[in-house]
Image (cartoon, rainbow, N blue to C red; front, side):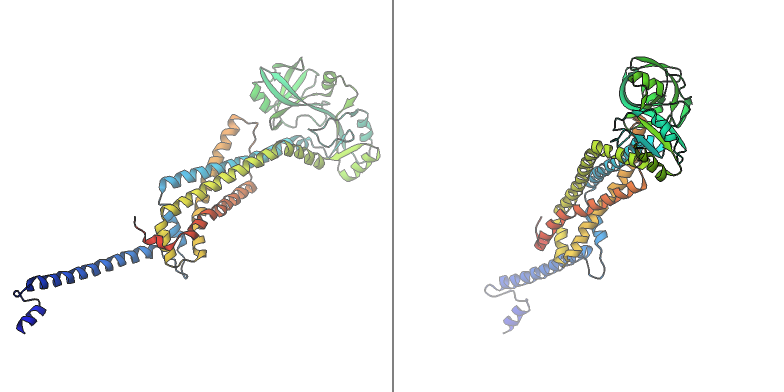
Length: 425
């Protein structure tokens, strides 16, 4: 009996197999205690780890968690922000270029001071139409009581070889001292003789022209007597000469292209002009039709490039966040295992895509401002006008990028099994 109690208390050292039995029992007990402590420690670590990603219904921590996930790959994040910034820079510059083209295409209508344009029947625009009407129309329109002033102008496009450069120009012939000529002179004076011209400042800079220099136009010598400011269109510039000079160049004396009309009563004046059987358009109509020509030539291409830039930016954001989901799928698995709802997962992904889009937006705006300044210095004919409305549109595009880009990584996250949180590796 004594030996039995000694064994129970672990004190027996004799008897057949006694020592081995007591030692085995003690070792087993210690192993169980160690295993229990390890399990408890592992559970505590897992609990602490999980608490970092816990998304409680009462207090959403999606933004801090999103930043942890997003910042986990700094190099990838920087490259993605740069790529998105370049895409958004392209959007800003293209919007600015489109606005600049609009303003330059209609610069003549905007600066001529005319309220009405009298032209050949069927004429719809100033730049895109060929118009020829008798010069006597000037006197007919001038006699109307509602008309303040009239001026005839002849206009046509031409590409001239000036100082070894092929320069696209829109030639305007007008009567000296009348409206329709250069509205702003930065150097020199208006042409008075039939062998004198005023050239736009952009053309003068590109061709290296100066006041007093003689150039050949249409095989005839002309002296540059002035440089006009704000007289450059997109890819073309105005050249002003006397109406008589254009008559001689084209061999069409007795005709003109347009009669510009100044009036304080445009509705009455256009009704009276049409009453004479003449074709007249308001400046607003001329502007609209010239912009429509611009749309046919440039808008489709610009929209295509805008769509490509938007798609590239969206794809970069989507791939970046998708890669983040795959790289940190165990942490996402913990979030799902803790019972995060679909809405919470959506906020988690959307916070990351929007953060990346907005970071790219800031970079894009800085790059766009720099790019616009460089382009304006190197190629002044490419007028880039960034308006507040354009900035708002690009901000909206950046937000749309973030929202659209969230779709792919969110679908992958929804399909991710919570058990991945407990996977090895």
